[in-house]
Image 1 (cartoon, chains in turn brown, purple):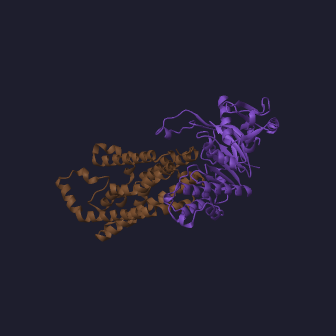
Image 2 (tube, rainbow over the protein chains, first blue to last red):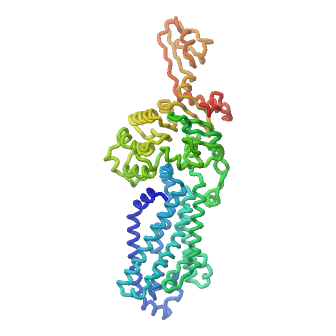
Image 3 (cartoon, one colour):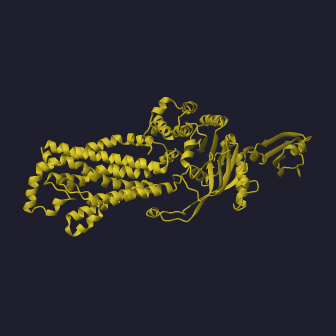
Length: 267
Length: 330
């Protein structure tokens, strides 16, 4: 890992990171508030049959329990967009974006191995995602405290939820980085990574809303983000291992591909 | 010791397509960007590397710095192998890419600090270079995005040379510099040479190669076409001669060594081309009532074009005799 490059990445991203962290924390403050304010009424509506029962299990979350509300927050598009700013945006542009702009020329003219560059980028993106997810946990605690439901929250299980989020988003980030080191332009790297995230999300949501499509869920990485289960005391070790394996495989692909490939002059 | 040497260095594209590339690109046939390049650059030399766009200049530089992997052949930079020791090479080399792209959001000063920090060697020459290229401290405080093309090029030169590298690889270094700054840059090169540094100078601006380089290699379609001292390359070039004499007392230059293309014009002028030693020519015109004599000096540009025409005529299959296959032999 290269300390000078890491420092540069930190300085260039810290303002954006701060904004994303604040937004993520704010969003997660909001979820216990929704649970406290509308949970009972929403449950009455569902029990009355006005709302289809399937809609109460959107991506493994609901608003009838604090754990369900937090789980809903983790798979909500707002959360996904915020984490994706780094897990997808930063990772895919880290190499392909520099290559497209031509600045990779200057960077690789320094005594920096491609593997060293890649490892530094991995460390940076994992740190950024980690901080965004820490902000989510802080928001959850603060929100629960504000509306007086802190006693319902298993704070001791939040680190495990953080780890589950890290493995999911870290996995996507490693896929993004593998795509980034493989292409000369940003668009294919971004396109492939976004497509994987969207298809994965679609399969999980579809399976959660439509019983006949439940069999598709295991093919989605989001399926292994088991927020509600973790907060209620169950841990899916297979899911955690699978997400880890996906990330490790993506790292392996990148570490083989990046040093081997030719970097022709930018067009 | 040679600062840089290549033996049969060859680069072909399209021979190692990886599956992931096929998602976005169709596999292409093999393209030979560089073929069997053998050159040697001595320490302390300013070596010109000439050729038109697509000739293989950038491919060569990218191979030397590890951006590309050679298909065949080998090369050593500062005694280190370009494949095994790429990182070590880049710690001792300064590189100015052609049409350099910089981090626009950084100020000039932060950019130079950052790149210097990545290089890991003190920026001992920075202050001197800033002074000679007339970049003020105030200018350096501004973000790079506000810089003109010339200022960007100056930053590019400084980032390549600020750590006083043993070898500088400069790709079109005067692009965007005004004539005064070009002159300042040439003076910097002279000083670097005097300090024993080696310069590998890629350009298609022949006049500047003629001005600064000791030797020149010319590449075309990925092959070495010529490798010579600039002085001897110019020496063997034909000079354009024009003679006027009173009362038509023009000398007879038929059969004079080195003279060719004799033409008498209707207004009484004699024009010809002169190659090599001027002694026989001067002896032949002595005693005639010459009123005007013009001998245009040979320019590298003409030498360059002639070599290209030679190579074209020979189908570009084999280097011309003057060329050198003696490539490695300086």
